[in-house]
Image 1: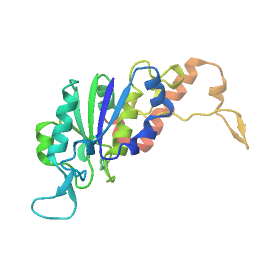
Image 2 (image 1 turned 45 degrees about the vertical axis):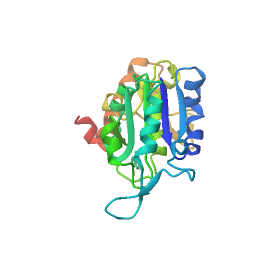
Image 3 (image 1 turned 180 degrees about the horizontal axis):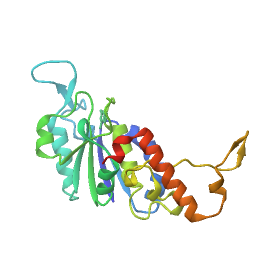
Length: 225
Ligand code: 6GU
């Protein structure tokens, strides 16, 4: 998969995409991510990409020309499966959306800043609008980092058995069960017997029960889906 990201702050995305599983995905050649500084398409020599909003009101709006020129230039060398605008008024990201997006070949993500981007860009180019939750961030960059991470780890071959996504929270609409490691007795707190039993069937049944219990207690809305 290839992901292009249009942003006024490429620096903000460099580190989150350069470590751990995102690094492995790129080292294995399964994922490439290109960060594009929107200022490259600025409307003047001052690097302007935003302006006051028509009708008045506080906050700048990202101008249509730089975005349109950037999107058109990038689209000339790729056919995007989706052009995604990260915005708090988009559909809320969940594991189902991530699963679907992980099958794409080419994605373009647009990070908004200030009051957001000119509405006409959303209408003409954007095919999908995603929020990462009901709270406001200063810009779309951290949301894009979240989206790339959660899609990237689902690309076939990125995870191995040890990091397998099959047992993650939210696959099957269940939260993950509790986990323990050594020592089996930590300051008098004991690991459940069944996990030391060596009986894979019993262990699997226990994990499933605990996952259901945890989901019922914490996220009854998930089980209902
Ligand atoms: Cl995608 N962008 C911003 N600015 N804030 C958010 C968000 C996105 N998702 C949740 N809050």
